Image 1 (cartoon, rainbow, N blue to C red):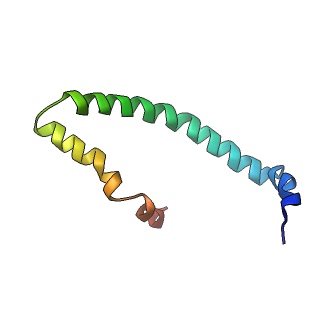
Image 2 (cartoon, one colour):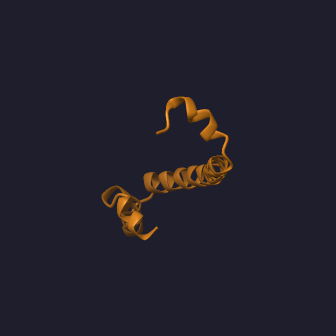
Length: 75
């Protein structure tokens, strides 16, 4: 059984450090990309009118209706 005292040792393991490094690398790339895309989509959805804006609004809203949990079955 592992206890809280072993936590620093687990953090120093190469496999754990590799996972943390990959998570930070992935977050460092996706956060700026999603921030730019989010601001752009927010501007377009806030200013635009018409059929294409309604379709874009529908597509942007889909992840709220279908949460990411079903995608875990395909990972």
